[in-house]
Amino acid sequence: MKQIDVQIMQQSYVLTCPDGQEERVQEAVRRVDDAMTRIRDSGKVRSRERVAVLAALNMAFDVLDRDAQQALMANAQAEMQALAQEQFTPPEANEAAQAELQRQQELAEQLVLKLDQALDADARLL
Image (cartoon, rainbow, N blue to C red; front, side, top):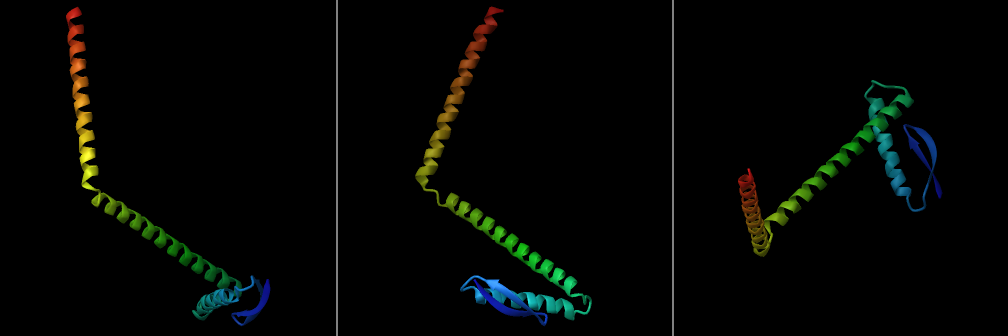
């Protein structure tokens, strides 16, 4: 672990970061500093604590929004793949499905005939 000195809204902080991750930590510090400075400079909030909370909320909202967009994109891609799969089903698969449907219809008709015969015989007993 490595310690680095950073500044957020002109206040110094010493942060610990994993080796090799200094640039990522610096980028995160830059984003936090930018977000907090924007809020402070808007003139509506002066308290450093309130500025930090608002910046954290804004950044969290941005992350959630990005996650939601990624989920929507993943769902759209999955639907597109499913549609593409349906469109490019080989004719042999369609023929097999048609044959199976025909076989099931014939079985259903045979069952109805047997039921009719059984009910007809039962009606004669009365």
